[in-house]
Structure formats: C-alpha cells, structure tokens
Image (cartoon, rainbow, N blue to C red; front, side, top):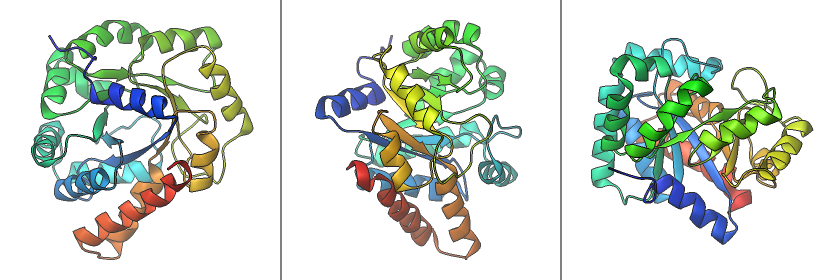
Length: 275
C-alpha cells in the first residue's frame, strides 16, 4: 500500500517551509486548447522551476468556476477530452519529465463517483498525480475518501470558504492533506485587482490553528496580490488569469510554442515577488 510519506506534493511543501519560501500554484485546464499544449505547458513549468501545478478536469457543470474557466472546459469537452485521455497525457509527461513538478487534479465528485471512487483514485495516482481537489465533496464523504486517497498515495486537499464557521474549518483541516485550499471570496472564480482585507486576516487566523499548509485561491490575478497573499499563506493559486492568457493567445492564432511561452512568461511575472 502507498502512503503519503513519499508524496511529491507533501514533500514539496515540507521543503518550502524549511527554506522559508512560498509557492505559486498555477491552474490550467487539461486539454485546452488541446492535450499536446497542456503537456508542453507542464514541461515548460517544470523547466522554469515551478514546484506545483493544478490541472482542471473539464466538467459540463463546473463548481464555482467563472466564465473564463467554464469556457475552456466547454471547448475541451467539445474536443473529446475526458479523464482517460488526461491520465494518458500525464503518464506521457511523467515518462519525459524530471519528476519534480507536483500535479494536482481539480475534479468534480460526479466524475469520481461515476468511475468508482477507489478505481478513479488509483488511476489518477498511477498516471502520476500527487493530489486531488474535489470541490463538491461533502465533509462527511471526505472522511471516508481521505484514507482511500492516502492508500493510493494521493493527498486529498479540502476547501475552506469565507463563510465556513471556525469549528468546521478545523474539522476540514483535519481531513485535508498536502495543503488547505482557502477560497478568498464567496462566489465564482475570476480575476480581481485585490482581495478583501478580511480574507488575509482569516488566513492568518487559520494558520495559528493548523500545521497544514494553507494556500489561497479565487481572484488572484497579479504579482502584487500574490505577494500580499504570501505574507500570511504558504502559497497563492492563480487560475482564470492564466487560462485567459492562453485563450487570448489561441484567439490571436499563435503557435503552440508561442502559447506555452506567453503562459510561462506570465507565470514568471506572478511568482517574481516570492522567488
């Protein structure tokens, strides 16, 4: 049986914390604009020294995703993208990679449940994923899924919203592995110029009550906000702003190489304050 002792994501956060460093966690949609581009972006991120990346598994009815990510999901699904093809792509990437980039799947519980929970987790781990974020997973289901994920070598990452009561936050923290995903604002994902001050205060408060790393997502779209978030959090998650740049580059008819280059350059800008 696998354990989390050797999990790439868990190990990465331990190393970052020991070095007093913070993480940028880019989010990209798997299969948008196509799987070859996704694979090329992953290789580019690893080459740039990124430690962690989230891959969104396209779903027809995404949870809390704003219009940019929803549009990328819709186009990926129309192109025939599914979990099996994504797993095959990740396996190819792992065979060619340096093995340093931790990969997290952001996936709806509907997809996991439809394939069979344990079977899906085993396939994800076998493909080369290190963690799972299942945004619509209820806490009572998480308690039973957590040991299954750990047994497969996957970190089960849980979300905490601004509206989550303090006691429930601690309960979620007990079931989250790898890191805690703190949702900075109520509502859907999307780019914002800055985050509400209470979000930063809430993360600082949460950090006082758990040893689990805390990363903040939703609304982070520029280097200044990444720096602000990382004053109190262990990492910043950026999705819509990156996916929008990929979409813009695609709309301009750029080649795959140029799309990868533009995404990578923007990601370098985002993480510059925490390097």
